[in-house]
Image 1 (spheres, rainbow, N blue to C red):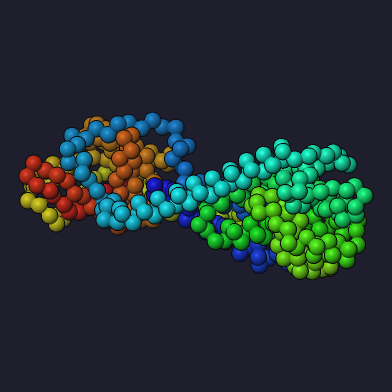
Image 2 (tube, rainbow, N blue to C red):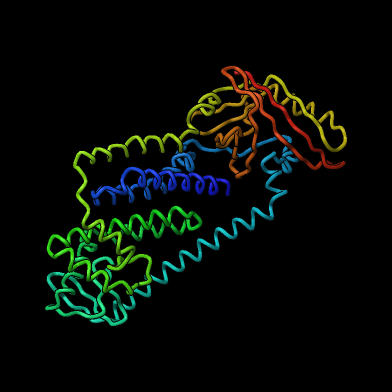
Length: 407
């Protein structure tokens, strides 16, 4: 669940950062194809880039051995600071996750219902082949497009306005704008809660319309075409994944049609997407730098202390844990696996590891996670603190285990 939250946070940041980048540098340009590429790229990279760190451990080829601990009965109830906080706040965390998944289900169901409804309507409509185009005619439709289909409420091949509409929608078909819209609808299923993804969708739809308007005005008078747009102002397809000739501000589209073309020198701005991508990759793969690199290596136990906060004194148990630690080694490998050995290389634990913030997190083959707070890390010294709580035959014992290692 923590991985999901991290993914959503990183993806949300990427969407916001990318959309702001587009608004500042590209929105006013008339390079509509380039603008479209930037917007679609923001969606794709925002969905994929967080996975660079999110799914790092799936690339490990090393086998993970079962945790074999002679003090297994103690570790059944081990919890950390993070886990303790989660236990206290379980109710609101569960409610938050329930609300999120309900939003996912609702958004996905709405999308599927819309697609099915459109397909059924197309099948129940009259299909006409005209100038190499597939026209779907039904009085229930408004001028729009859906993949290779151009949807119309009526069709007269001699009507100039119908020809303009068909040309407009043909641009959407040829440019495969429906794929863009389906992509962002799927992104909205995951990030339905993020307000900026709706703003990014609006920018993408506007760019689609600007592209289509530009092609139409090359064959027809901008004045006549503007009148057609005004006549269509009350039409609304009501479906989020379709291109509708009447979408968005008519005034803005008319202004853009009559706007002077951007200087070709401004195309150099698109080169700025390269450092943006590098920056985003750096942000989302930062867990492979800094603290991660420092912690990789072989560490020998050098000190052990237990600060008890609850329960009876357990001197023998503490001494046993100290002896295990002092005789042990923690081997942290670059491929994302770890191994704990005791004495003559007897394996006392193994699995995968990662660093999140100041936490060193280990996961064994049974999916048991342990969180260690790193309070000191240098080239030759590692100190961690672990909150523990365990049930003993007498009563519950709780406190902090402080482990010190030397490289």
